Image (cartoon, rainbow, N blue to C red):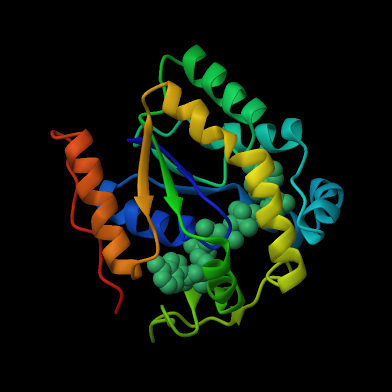
Length: 220
Ligand code: AP5
């Protein structure tokens, strides 16, 4: 299955992508993780894109498209988290997939009001060992993840607000883009993590009745 996950920062795209990997067998591709890996590894590309990430701005379309594309030829499909994030990125994705004879199967948009997202983002931690994302209260790390658990530099209140503004301006128009193509599935994301995961799998099962979907793993 080739799925695009949309939604504002902190709505749970990465969290649900981790569970969707288990449900579908497709890998999770997060352009945010790709960006942070380049920065952490001190590559020349990382030096170029660091300033965008640190101030909560979007990396230029041509750079992010070039970073994402090599990950998209997996025969198991993919769960794309954080890409595309602008109309030009969506067009570039469609063009590349079309040339390869494939296409996006569905775009899932997670919706929650901005005010609810601040609490989620300020409690978010990412494991340095496994790359998995947790929340100090809503999804604490399990005992078999050794950590350490890092808080992202862009999860500060002023940068969160700026990133949310950017979402409404640059990314929200993708709802119309995918809606016009009959690909948009909308999920209300104010419920618990497990309840949202169940809704996602149920919605996919309705849309793709023959797809082999396992139940999503429950939060320990
Ligand atoms: P990226 O890493 O994608 O960050 P983001 O867009 O800010 O999205 P988030 O990761 O913050 O949101 P999420 O929805 O995944 O939330 P999560 O599941 O973690 O991008 C970082 C940067 O890279 C960008 O700013 C940009 O510079 C660059 N970049 C990346 N892609 C780009 C692109 N395509 N174009 C240009 N630039 C790009 O959940 C948040 C927290 O809430 C977690 O702690 C989680 O445990 C908790 N939580 C989740 N669901 C629930 C729930 N239902 N109830 C309670 N808590 C919950």
